[in-house]
Length: 501
Image (cartoon, rainbow, N blue to C red):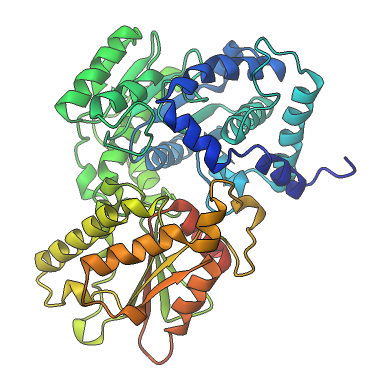
């Protein structure tokens, strides 16, 4: 190669994406292919020059769950940085919103394009220089997420971080992050019927997957869970010989605080983060936990940031336009989204007589989920209007609804960091999912004017339609939900990066 730029790294990384057919084939096996993930990941780690025990030097806090695991990691990150400003804290999360380097952070800041390219190609070159494989069927290079996990570990080890907050990608037991022999502490956030789809959709099976991150001699923490899920987590902790199994009680005074991440559901995430941080700091910094929330914890929780989740952004170029961004993509997270959005602090902040024009931009991975997703959102919307004693009709709450593909630009091209092979040609050209969503909306709100239901081929098209509504003095509120990839594309195309990220 003649150059080794960030763009080159992104292009190489995108070549490792699995296409839609591959992902569907993996789902069809019921998870059997996942069982090879851990031995393959160990082999890739060895090929780039590390042993599993090397990962213990990262001082890992390992976090999984159905919902809230990213927010919990963000709270832990903020606490560690506030308590130990002299430390170098690594944070590895997924997915990214606008730039892939967002997934690998040091003290809350994504590593630079130069550093990402450097670490990326060091891993790439080591794999190319050592192609010896125990199983000839193992791919020469790991798939997208696995490769990024290797890059993150290589970066953190090279930079000698003092602590690493490691978010599981999918599931837990077979996730590529799950080869750290001895994390400092592990945590499971709220369980629910999420979209992993590999072991089935019962809560017990999901709990079995998530509990797979528990390790011998390591504290196993979780939030209060439904009884069946909690019992499976307890069994997994015993089976995997955790040092203890601990259901985190709520920290006194937490509910009195204003958190940096809005939404009532964030208090449970913040609570787990406090317990994880306290365990970690006692083990690695000999800091005994306070009996109450100290001012430094209060400040850390207030300053925590996690873009794209229940986030309000004023448009820097269009003063009358406000974006409400939430990558909620499960039934439970969409429920939380509507609790946050239909509230006097957000979309109900202005008197009904002069209310903003409201627009919904929505997408999800399958239009077949549209009826349940959009139906649940509409039910919660109606409930919230009644709760806040608003006379507004739920059927007329949104003035326009837009269903668009996650294609970045009107030209049909993607921003490099947002390119996706998971979209089939039929989905892109025929907008199958978006038409299914539009039909679902018509079924839920049959009185909604058809000319205000938009099916559009790109995020840029959607933003253009939203901005066309901004004539006159009336403000515009735009709720973007259903997909973090959609939220990231909106931030990119609408020029919100400087204020949103």
